[in-house]
Length: 364
Image (cartoon, rainbow, N blue to C red; front, side, top):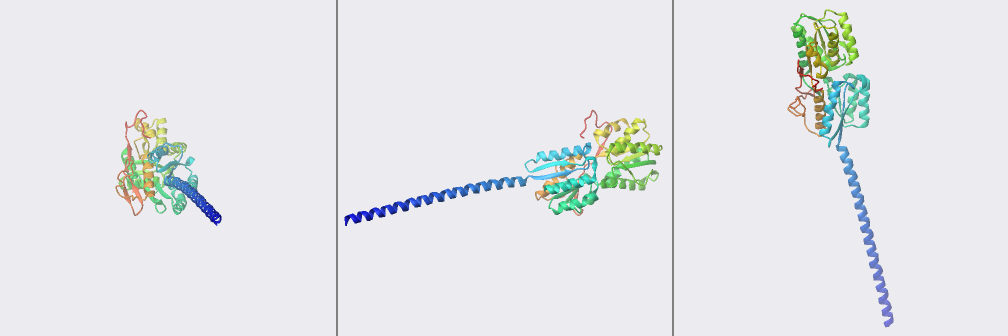
């Protein structure tokens, strides 16, 4: 009997040992599974954090008119400065077509849409040809901003201007009238008949002259075109002087037109033709100082490049753009906004004066 009890106790003890060992093994497995699960969660969390971080860095691209000319080289400086200041939030850059080809510019925007950038800013060579592709970008949820293209406001979030184009055009032609003493024949040249801004300046200026200076006469019904190209502008200048040796004035809405006309006059040692034009210090100042150009006006490309990027970032972050919003660039600290037409106006005209820039001390 005692022997049977001993055997029974032994069996029960062995069963208890097996049960305890099994429970320990199960707990260990459960613990390992839990740790593994937490490890995977941590990995997923880190992966999500990295992905979120990448998505929060907005891609903003300025598509300028023309590669390799001083005006848009300066604009790139403003875009780059903005990108450096807000490097934790954005990747900002500028691209532009060689030769200012409108078709190539449209293709560049098409490529940016395919890349899925967050904002596209464009200074169009031909606003009408740009309109369909900007509509496509808008439909994809991409923020779109234009410059020098107030007729694109139905397909962009905003158009941004350094000033009101009518005022800028009147100022240019008023200075032409002053230099010509209000009478005589003159020639006008624009970068292109499809360039909205150039044509707005030209049309506003011509209306101003018609109302105030009836003795001033344009030699042609429409302006010459230089395509923002120095070679074309020079050839046109030679052609004009040959066809109209008695002209008293020349007005140009591109940097190329005015500087090349002044250069040809300098070669011919002629100071009898008043020259008024869009200009930049590095190109126009020498002709102003030497007396071959009477007046040049512009705005700082770098500043509007910076301000455009600032506007794009505000929209991407959900901020409101309103009157007096500070876009952090000179002339754009207290903007005026036409909300109905979606146009942002700065107050940033720049007049080049004799002796103002010497010894190659040029901002652009």
